[in-house]
Image (tube, rainbow, N blue to C red; front, side, top):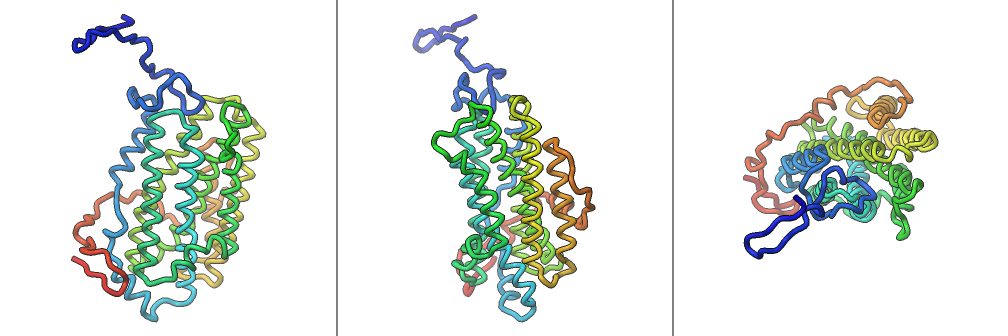
Length: 353
């Protein structure tokens, strides 16, 4: 049947014009209305969206009074303070870079509604993460201008951010299109840059550093927020890898040997940036951490990311921080309302339930 009669108006609709799930594609789909979510084709995109919703949290629900006491005391060494400050500096603007890339570069070129649904959720989560660093800075009474300008003023942070931002220049060009082979390849480079490198490699050294404090019951408010950020980022990474792999499947002509070599080269370059960052954060080592351990760790996670997008491993290093796997599996069992801030106030006048 190609048409149906509607009881209320007596009109006829051509059902052949309705969306067919097999016509859906992640990019370059002109046959499908992006406003119509149903029927779903990419169950993985919808599942990631649901997981993101289930993991919802807000920074101001996390207590900071113990962090404030410790930060104001003499219990933290200068090297420990350096680790904390450098990571606040990187993450405070790194999350914004990712969010802006979603909104300005990725979203308009994705032509599938369920994938767009997740991108909207992810962009909101990036805003929450940026909010978290504003909350931490304000709670500890830090110089916000210093923290939020580190991506301009600290070489190891500036190098990482500029490297990733260079991967979005072509996609931001008003004339950019994914309708050419070169355009699809540039779009894949952008996705690998932000999902695999930024969120899948660059963020992970910082997670280890901050969560090492948390494992020793120090800076627990920051640590708890980093746990929830890590859980969100794990979903972001999984979505990004599914997105990259499905675009590859739908556009096999773009997955050339030259592109694969370029992506391996990008990831190897990113590993060196991250090792330099770890070295700058840990000039003397703290909490049993040192730059050599992070070299191993960054190489280890880079190999895992390469495997997941079907590229050859490069390092075969061991994982010196196996406890991170347990942290990434963190269930949402914390009852935020048991420790919720009753009124959002600054570091000097926090009041807790």
